[in-house]
Image (cartoon, rainbow, N blue to C red):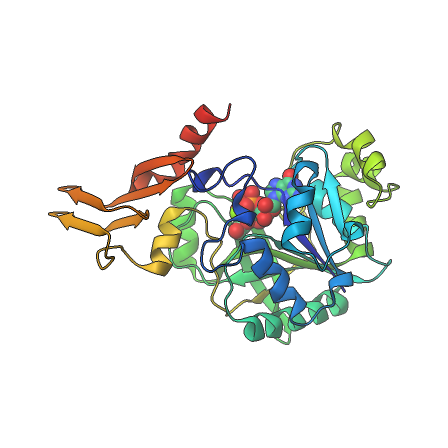
Length: 332
Ligand code: GDD
Ligand code: MG
């Protein structure tokens, strides 16, 4: 098996910790290690470094190699521009042998239990091999989140593997609420397993343009990628393939998981800051602070306050995703 870490996101929602030079995967959020380092170590628990690859932006080459010194440059696939995850999954999958299993995963998720993670991955590898399908890992939903893909699980085909009847990327709030009530819908964790040949077949069927542009390139040759990448359609694998293919399967991922989407998801894991020595609240509750300075909050509830060398953020809890707009104003 080859594991492909997708590390091309921008992490706009983690400003002022993240910047264009330091996107989310390089942030140290839950430990002294960056999220991409944690992801690598989770894989390295069972896989050798030679079978672990990263797809990232050319400008993040040095930093990626610095974070993951076990990898040679041959294990880092470089994109001159971001074209979202469908092209990134494609160039990543090209690394594998014809019917070898490819494991695609994001660089920036939080999954603390390696043992449990691998139990599910092993099942997924089997499922990809036995069903000749595109295998997703479903997470039991707990809220009508509109930032995720939803998997409608159908008939069980054995060993806890279910056929997916319907995949819906980022539904609106109403639809997400309905899915939550139905009970047989799961969140897409953003991790996928497939055999290379099956993936290529499905890409050819539903995204012939991307298939034709990329099918013959050598993913390790940065010049070849440069020549074709600009012309590619920007589309995520969820819209490009998961919503379309009739060969999608799912297995339940019962490990602790978070996609660390924004500051509120960090607060959910770390708790509020009222107990911190440098945080002083007066008539304020539900306050999350990251700063080394003394911070006083008076008469303000449900707020996120972050101070780093890049700037200071004060955001109402229910609007933290709009930090993007601040980021875009600063780095336009
Ligand atoms: N190499 C590369 N190039 N990586 C990319 C690119 C790109 O152009 N765009 C995004 N990525 C990486 C991100 O860094 C992240 O690790 C992963 O691909 C997923 O991209 P996101 O942009 O974070 O996707 P999302 O969160 O909106 O949605 C996906 O993940 C959800 C779970 O976290 C989808 O798969 C959803 O269905 C899913 O629920
Ligand atoms: Mg994400």
